Image 1 (cartoon, rainbow, N blue to C red):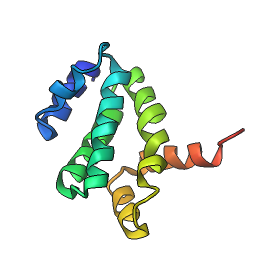
Image 2: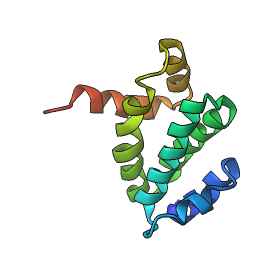
Image 3: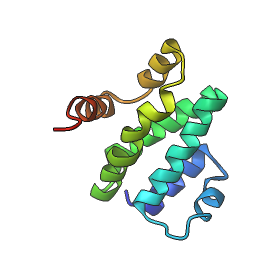
Image 4: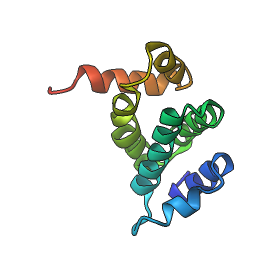
Length: 118
């Protein structure tokens, strides 16, 4: 899967996603994942759980089926920012969010957290 295929996948969950994406001057794997991450962050803040859970599953699918650039973008943008947008959630809500993320992405998250500064 390349970034344009990822956009099609995301649009299944967030129909307005292409409009959000066109606000960016440059469209590539990193801008797609950055924009999708911002959408997910907004869903977390608004407690929009149904679309949030579908979006997290879509992020997993993009990571699993994505090309190397998409995988790097997911690891470098989405995984890296998880703490940033879940820090003000209740402990219970944060656990629910993480339960909708694949074990593989949870492991990558743990590696990032515990290897920080090394």
